[in-house]
Structures are given as structure tokens and as C-alpha cells.
Length: 480
Image (cartoon, rainbow, N blue to C red; front, side, top):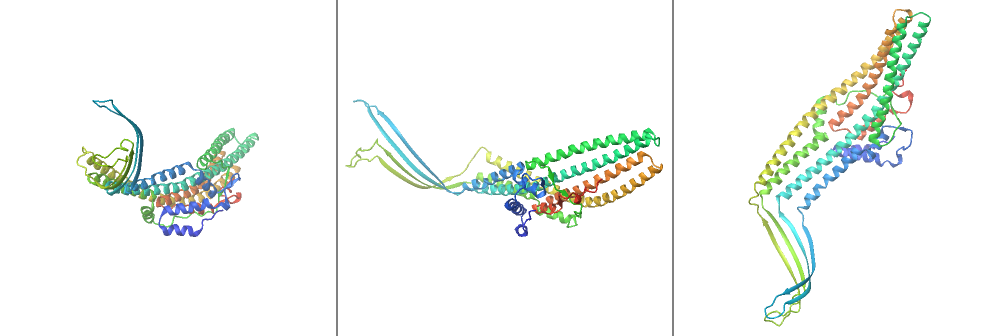
């Protein structure tokens, strides 16, 4: 079992960022080379499956690539504020003919070439400055969106893992029910053969048995389907996974007040943080579009060198000097551009950016309300699951007692086969509901933490403590 060092969790907490917690803990799990994946091993626990998902999940990989691509917008926008240096060069061969009245045309064939360098530095460009601010906001948004996908991977892995266990436990229950009903069918057949019961008892028992077989077949298929859903995330066939211990505590979420969870969600929810950065980007975009009315100032310097054979050797008029055919030029200057009229395009772009900012703000408000509502709902559901698990556990005890009493009554003739079969069905239904309630509690608790923005790989670590490969320790071990 791989343990996340306590100091990593402390550092992440001090950083005050859910992103730090996701990255540090996930990297720690991946870096544990001394405890490599059990590729080809028979058993996988929750940590093993999570590590496979980190390496192979296509959704997470796509999110990572998308985040890195968006982050490149910031250096691209910053480049518009930095110096720009360019170099040009040209060479050409010329054939020139000059027409003359008194003599034959003058023909010259010559080669010429030139090269130059230009340095430009923006001094005042509001559009580039605000565009850089927008790009930084997009970059921050991408980081939060990727961190959310990291959290979402934890939830998806947990759901897929426990859905496999849920399906396997349902199959155990279905097989046990089928076996119990088959025994009742055999007993009814024997009693009918010796004349103790009517044929209707046999027919009723057979009908229930056939239905139990159907339930078992459906359960077997559900196990196969759940394994395929797990394969989508891990990209690997996993045949055997650890079971959930029956000793795993089912306790209400802490803190025990819904408003405390809502306050956490408002501060830490990664989707909210990403949406907030989206609003910031939209505000910077408005500033950038408004700056289309502002002038721009650039400083520039250039140097040009040229050489041509056309004038080489020619005498400079009225002097004893001759042209060498070579020359250069150095220029320094400022370039001022003042937009006067652009056909109304700039004003239209400002209005467009304003509407987009309003859209981003409304989407943020909507997400904030949904986050508040979802957090409260998950909190209430998780607490309800705690009570449901307790009630279902007591329900199993009551159903077992009722079944024993019904069987005793059937043996002395005060109850019929229908009563026995109904009591059996209620018992196994109670067992299925109890198992489902425990798995629902786990998933709803993780959803609550994700909504509050606190879900991290340490939650996988905590859950993995309650995974076992010993048959007698699993929650379904008592089903017979």
C-alpha cells in the first residue's frame, strides 16, 4: 500500500490552493517507483486502479493537453509588448537596357544585393497590454479547469471501482437468492410427491425460482459491464479488485453544518474559480477592445547595407572621386499611429465584448447558485445515507427473523409457500439495499468533497485502507 507523506498534504494546505494539493499528491503517487504497478498481478486495490487511471485515462490526458495549449496564450500575448528584431537580405541579377537617340542602346548586366536589420519596441499600446491581461486570465482558468479534471478523475475512478463491487455484491446476493429459492422448490416438490401440499405450491415456487434465475443472469451481465466501464478509464482489463471491508465506518460528514460546507465551496470549488477567471478575462477583453480608440507609439531602429555593380567605378559628377557601389544607412525614429475612423468596427467590438462579459458574469452567478445547491444536496444526501445504512442493517435483522418465523409456520402448516418465498425475497432485497446504501454513502461523500473543492488523492488513500482481499472481511461475506 502506498502512503502519501504527511508533509506533502501540509504543504498543499499551507499553499491554500486545491491545485497544489492535486498536483503534489498525484505526483507523489506516480513517483513511487519502489512500489510499481502490479501489471499482470491478479489483485488490484483502489490505489492501483487510480495509478493506472492517471497514466492511461484519455479524458485526463486531453484536459492536460488543452490546459497546456491555453497556457501558451500568455507568452504569445506578452511577446506583443517586447522588442521585435527582424533581419532581411536580398540578392538579384539585373539586365538593364537604356534607349539612346544618337547611338545604340546602352546595355548593362550587373549584380546587386542588400541586407538590413530592424528593431521595433512598442512604447505605448493599450490593446497589447490588456490582451496580455486577458491571456493571463485564460491561463489561470485553464489551470483550474485541469485541476477540476484531476478531481473528477478521483470521482470517476471511485465510481467505476465501487460500481464493480456493487455489481459483484449484487451477483452474490442473486446467487444466494437463487439457491435459497431452489431449495424451497425442491422441498415443495418433495412434499407434493408425498401428498403434503397442493401442486400450486410447486408452481408458485417454480415461478419464483425462474424469476431468481433471471435476476442472477442480469447480475452477471452487470458485473461484465461494470468491468468494461473500469477498462475505459484504466485502458486495462482488471479481473479482480479488492472488496470493501464490513468494518468501514459510516459516519456523517464533518463539519456537521451544511453552511460550513457551502462556505468551503464558495472559496475552494475549482469550477467556480475557473468561471471567475473567465469573468476576469472578459473584463480585460473589454479594455482591449476600447483601447482600439487609443493611439500607439513604437520606437524603431534600422540598419541597411547595399551593394550594386551598376554604379561601381562611375565618377562622381564634378569631382575626382568614383563610386564604390556600396553604401549603408542607419535610421532611428518613433512611429505614432492615431486611429481616426474604422467604419464603426471598434465600437461594435466594444459592444460585443461587453455582452460577452455579461454572459460570463451570468454564467458565474448560475454556477455559484448551482454549487451552493449541490453542496447542500450532497450534504443532506450523505447524512441520509448514514441513517439509511443503519436502517437497512436493522432491516436485514428483522427480515431474517421474519423468514425464520415464516418457515417455522410453514412447517407446522400455519403459513403457505407463498409466505415463505415472499419473506425470502424481502430478506435478499434488504441485503441488496444495505450494500447499495453503503456504496451510495461513499460516492455521495466524495461528491460533497468535490463540490466543496476539498477532494484530493488523500481521499483515495483513506478509502484504500478499507479495501481487503480477505473473503471473510468483505461486507458481502455474510450473504448465504
